[in-house]
Length: 282
Image (cartoon, rainbow, N blue to C red):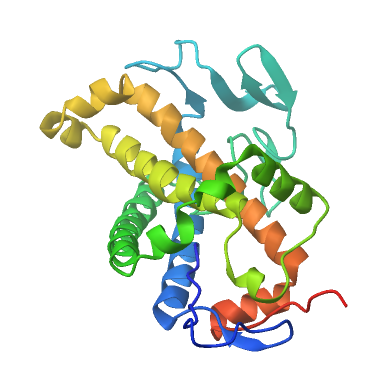
């Protein structure tokens, strides 16, 4: 869901606060919305797949009688999230919850968070694998275009002065105080955005794809080095889950920043491509 802003010629005057400028290309806007739908479909279908065996392990093997490092389940009428020795009650949300008909269900994730909403592992896999191809093809296309038009080099790679602890700490404080850039500065990524986008684009996304492939016996037969790379199929499944959780956290923060920065202006820019620069303080 990363965006690419248009750039102005050195001969053009820098736009001022209040000006309506073109922010996102049509191709960027289309990719953003396809990617947004794809990620939600994959997360929701992935949670249904997880419901089939709501436990995570490290190593090659994992079964009901092995010791998991994470479990989402039920003990009697109580829902529980167990992470190592920590047990968190989750009744009504995770483990034990009611479906739309009021019937008590005992699955890890509730009906409103999964695709399909009723338990169906086969359909969830169809959804998940279809949108996995959409994610991979779209991601590779984004990589290719972003390097060709130098979006990565120009907009995402941090400058030397941005990597100084003083600069990073200054941006952290500005975010904590909800001080967002004004005028033309709003069109440029700050260092925290660059870190987030680079980590997702070149860290989380490749890990999700590679660990997903590692869970396939057919792929393991062709590429056994994947099992060695991730320390076994169950370790790959755990890393896959953690990456998905990280992606979900990124989306939550992203949406929160959109709301705080002005949702109408931000969403309009991703639909029409036009963005009104925030006015500088008098």
